[in-house]
View 1 (cartoon, rainbow, N blue to C red):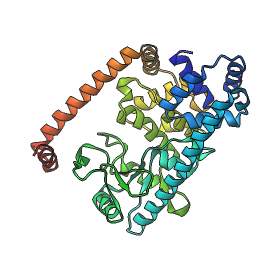
View 2 (cartoon, helix red, strand yellow):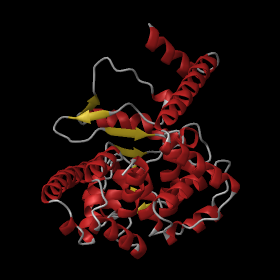
View 3 (spheres, rainbow, N blue to C red):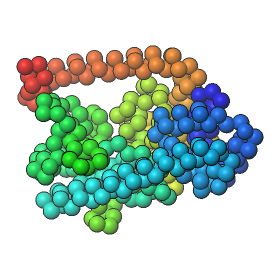
View 4 (cartoon, helix red, strand yellow):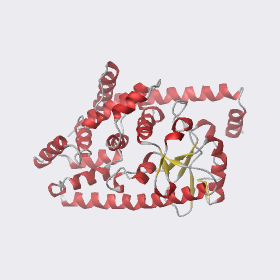
Amino acid sequence: MNYKETLFFIGKCLTITHEKHNRELVEKKIKNNAVDWDAVVKVSTAQYVFPALYCNLKRANFLQYLPNDLVEYMQHITNLNRERNEHIIAEANEINKLLLSNNITPIFLKGTGNLLEGIYIDIAERMVGDIDFLVNPEKFKITVNILKENGYKEKTSDYLDNTVLNRHYPKITKKEKIAAIEVHYKMITNEKGFDYNFIENSLKKLTNNINILSYENQILLTCFNKQINEKAQWTKTISLRNSYDLYMLSKRASIKTVLNKFYHSKSDYLKNFLAITNYIFGSPESLVYIKTHKTESYIKKVLFFINNPKESANNKKKWDLYFLNKHRFSVILKSFYLKKYRKYLFDKFF
């Protein structure tokens, strides 16, 4: 199995709990001993879906076809991730209680929000790095101060506050807590159409007064986080973890409804992420979309880079350099008329 074959096999495995056709294809491939499990472990780990892969194979009763040592390893890693996620959920609840007591409503995002809401059959499926949450921009600074007063602090004493350049405050951690915290005042880099004002009136309130985005806005954030924040719209890279989130959300909200309701200059980014997820996951019905010249062109370019890793690396370097230089120029330009940018440059260089 080459990289592309491995990637597409994993993509289908992530849907076998719900997609009968993919389940049959995966079972046939496994029974025919046509799977390079070393490659599958390597790629699924790099894509942060190794536990999700195990959980889906287990639910489909396919573990019986796998080598015993592999099953034991997969089970071990998945159990570790489940334990970590239990700690993350507990920490998120503590943060929520603390901030609510100070009249601040945190809105939990991305992986943490998905865990709290329970969109996965098993919480072990999602690998989560940080605890991300959004607050009203007017209460952003006081939120950070409250967390610091309650034991959270920056990783190093010589940290540089680069909030002005970012969507969130620099990561903060608390002793004996398992995850870093990212306090957001916006969700998307340099975007005004999908912000706090856009989502505040459609929040979902869970038990323990936990607030998260509506399903439709979770779908939008999942797509835009990959396409804009992580620059996939330009680098043409993929993320099975993000795609799996989109797939699971598509079981709870209509993708078609989201596409019809959201009119925005970046709607093509949403459609492109949907298109490549649909393609890699074997065209599940919940991810159906209207094909256009732009979506077909995007898929074609992504597939080209999957087949040509050197060109993919060069393309990513090119765009990384472009955005770095664009970012630097923007900061310098804004420093002429915005005090906060002048302060950042002064702190950085003096």
